[in-house]
Structures are given as C-alpha cells and as structure tokens.
Image 1 (cartoon, rainbow, N blue to C red):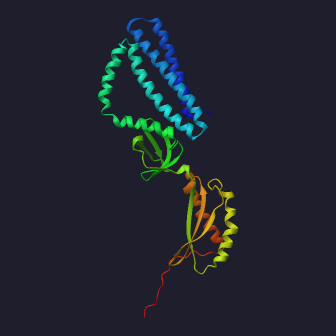
Image 2: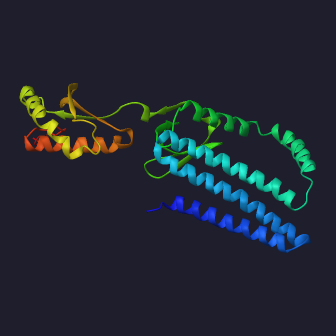
Length: 286
C-alpha cells in the first residue's frame, strides 16, 4: 500500500507535469501577454515536477535507516528552498524581466539583509554540520533542555523533537549545543522496592533467581534481555530496599519500567513476599 506522503509526491509530479505540458502547448498557440503567462506556467511546471520527483526518489531511500532518513529530510528542505528561488527568478524571466538586472538588485538587497540575518546563516551552517557529523538522526531519542523526545525532522534551519504525548519542540539548529542522545547508548529501566526485615533473604533471592528469567518471553517486545536482580540498595526505616534492572531500547524505556514493576508485584504476590508500609499504632485512651 502506498503511504500518504509518497502518494502526495506522486500527485505533485503528475500535476506539475500537466501544468508544464499545458503551458508549453498554450505558449505555442498564443502570442503576446498571454504567451508570457503560459511560458510562466511552463517554467513553474518543470521546476516543481523536478522538485517532487527528487523528493519522491529520496523518500523511497528514507526506508534504508536513520542516517538515510536524516539526509532525506535535509535534502527535502534544501530542495524546497531551491525550487522557490528558481520559481521566482525563472518566473520573472519568463514574464520578460531582465534577469541580469534582477540578480544585481537582489545581490545588493541580500547584502543589506545579510547583516541582519546572521542567525539564519548560523542555523543553516549548524544544520549541515549536524548531518555531516551524525550527532543525531531522525528517529533518535534526545534530551534537550529537559525536553525528552524523538527527532522527527532535521531541516536546514530547525530541528523538530516530539515527546511521548505528541508535543513538538522546534529548535533553531544554532541553539542546539548541550543535549543527550539517548539512542547512542544502552538504556536501562530501574525498579526499586522494599521488602520486610522479617523476610528471609536467602529464600527471597532464591525465588527471584528462579522466577525472574521466566518473565523475558512475555515482554521481549520491550525487554532486550531477562531482568536482573542487583541486590540490596538501601536500608529504610520500615524495610530493605532492593533493586531490579532490565535493558531496553530508549524508545521503550518507560514501558519497560512499567512492565518490570508489574512483574515484580506478581512474583511477590505468588510467593507471599511482603511489601512493608507505615502502619499507625492506635493506643486506647486511659
């Protein structure tokens, strides 16, 4: 089944090709101002047909992996800018404007604007270095300014990050300095729970060693291996705190922790292992 984004690009190629063909035909059949307008349609048609064709080709390449997907997003962004600029200049030429004079005017204007657009240039250059150095790719989980999410888009100017709730953070590339890429290292879900001081520790550890490895099969969608018991973490006023961990992909880290907590509670229930909690002492009044 063709994806919606791919279908849009196919339609874009087809529509642009029709506009190009129609413009070329009508330009040939007409003269004067009408011919200039149809020449403009022809020019815009070929530019956007090429744009949609390029993005369609690279969209198919995107399936090859995270790195390829990141490069594809950047190429999409660059192609869009180039298509707009070419549409502007070649469109003016098709209407009869003097392209040399137009370029000279734009050059002076760009020089003036350039002094106030240093951040824009910095964003673009930083974006290119991000792609070249592979600091992160589309699909990676990153933490930026306490915002944790998946990279969904890397453009010429900005990077878009989406958290588990669907909230998106759009950041200028030049502002991305201190961040963590959680996808480039192994992630570990941690669960700590207290057991009673009256619990026989040897018996408890024997139960855990027997039952914990059996939990992997039913949770291998979020666990990368069987959970592990690490031992006593801390002595609490009302119990002994023990620690469990399980390796997981960063994208599944919260699901892995919830699954681990559930499994530990089930093991405790099956084996009558008590989880201590503060209990009030009521003394009868005299």
